[in-house]
Amino acid sequence: MIVLRSLVMAFSLFTVIPMPQVDWSERNMRYLMAAFPAVGLLIGALVWGWWHLCGMLRFASLMRAAGVTLIPVALTGGIHLDGFADVMDALSSHAEPERKRQIMKDPHVGAFAIMGVCCYLIAYLALASEVDEEHLLALACVPILSRCLSSYATVSFRKASKTGMLADEGTTVGAPAIRLVVLGIYMAVGALLVACDGAVGVLVVMAAVVVLLYVKRIAEREFGGMGGDLAGLFLQLAELVMLAVIAVVGRLV
Image (cartoon, rainbow, N blue to C red; front, side):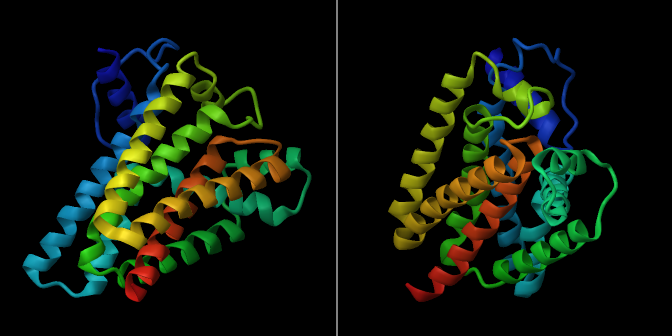
């Protein structure tokens, strides 16, 4: 039952899909982040299905790329993109870490957030339009890989605050089990990509880890540690960089 409750809570929190009501107790939340990659699996499956639907309907690459770009946003309600936007506003302030954390909590959207999100979506759309079908598996695995490492960061990295959603999720007694599960999934998916997609698979797996280390450095230097918005920043940047690897390296090998 704990597995089912964790899945229900993960989809309730990280998607717009209506789910049964569960008790959001500390006990039930213990393994919540271990179920986070399942959200990525659903997104990957929808991307896979959209790709083939576009082929059946003979849609152009722009229509296919638009679906690849918008499916994650639509399914998640933009929760991670919202975190990305908040961090863009905070970083643009060049203020002290405490002030940056306050800016991220501000419900108002600044100019740098808007510009950052627009640039992100344009870049994602352009890169998605350049992906060949032979690398569709790698494309579908991107949201799984990003959520595996996001879960790992949530329960492993130093927190900027002792309160808030990330702190609640990341300070449970289930942290060792969560790390074991998500790293196991990451390695299994990575091995599948390497076996099926060769050099592209290797570089995709490595790229996500590089982005994780980069965001960890930013979080500790600029904000005093990780937070929910920074987890969103990581997820979005990791998916963009992995997509860039698929689009660019896929054309070279």
